[in-house]
Length: 456
Image (cartoon, rainbow, N blue to C red; front, side, top):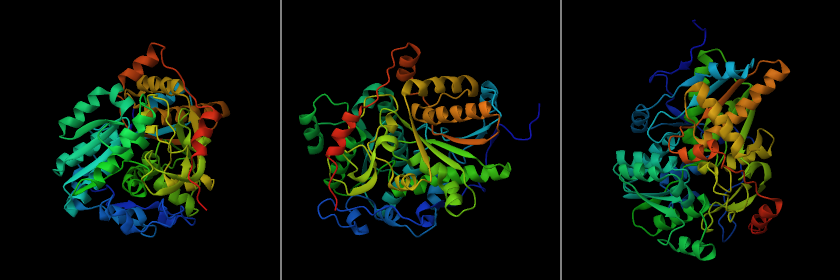
């Protein structure tokens, strides 16, 4: 039976955006500046040069340029897997018996299995252009590490990846994929850095965190000539690159004469969510439209919903500048649940500011409910989602059920950030009933808040 709206809509290569969108250019109230941790004075762009590529440092600090040209070399790489499809979830709608229309932007059509490649290729390109000779990074679930290994192989740059130890142990084949692309991978915290040794001395049995891995990667970069550090989430530059997700999604919906009432994305550090919502938040900021925007985070690491809006270090080793964001404290060690890409103590300063100003919402969900949604989605839409993505799926399903109960039709858009083929240990735990929900107590969170830096 023919339908007015196709199951999948792909833009052509010619239609693919040629510029990234910088959301800060339309924010009347800007995020607070990063601060030097010693002086508490605002960081200047040149202060970032020892850690980041110079062009990326400039993008990090730029709050006035609305659109940034995507370099031709990056566009050529994008064409290997982009544009990505906008999918109408007809089968999911039918299974839920909902009047809602559900769309998802699918970012899993590349070897990393996620959206992370969108920023990885840009960061590797700028590093190569500057003449750098190697890069370091951290990775949680492994999608970012894989994506950056792909990009560095393409631009012939050596790479060292520090992977959160519990994820490294849960997903051994991520190591194999990263090594296939020529990168070195080290479980974090490790004995290869001063930061890692210090963390292990304090907590020798820790499963690690993204904050730990960031500390190690930065130390490696600043002690290695010709090396710089790159990050796959949180930073302003990453949200800039990931805006291609939302730009494509909005353009495809315009072709279909659709506009979302509700936009839902998983939230860890903010890269996928920030990229998906960027052009729709622009409409909101400019008074053109007023979609609801919902961040879905794990109840085990409830940064938005139970964190504090405060200045904090971006890493556990406390070597980064201070950023004002929603945070659980840089010392917070989340439980080793299966959404490794969402186990970060802080949130993008851009998204934190938007949330603090009431321009978006946030909910936290336990992992058993998330995997229930993942299995339901897989059975109906044939894609096995990553645990991170399944948070957005859970949010979209719950929203669609509300539409059914209220008898109202809404258009829902969510981000399907990637695939779960390296997460079968997690799926097995859910299916055999051994998966447990871990939610930090108020006392657990208070310990992290006690150690937040004091900023006058």
